[in-house]
Amino acid sequence: MCEANAYILKNGQEELILESVDMIEPEGEGGYRMVSIFGEQKIVRGKIKLMNLVNHKIVFEEYS
Image (cartoon, rainbow, N blue to C red; front, side, top):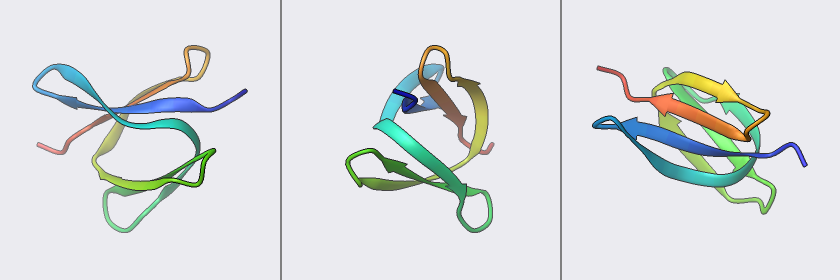
């Protein structure tokens, strides 16, 4: 399996946004739309801080 869990960094802590993310695509200005393998969709505003696909992890950082 190639999916990953997506998190957002808030106050130095990683907060889970969406599990089993299969696809990420740009959405408007400064956002990303994520789709899980179950068809669930979420939009996150921020920038990608880290993608570690070996560990199935994507971390977003809110804009300052």
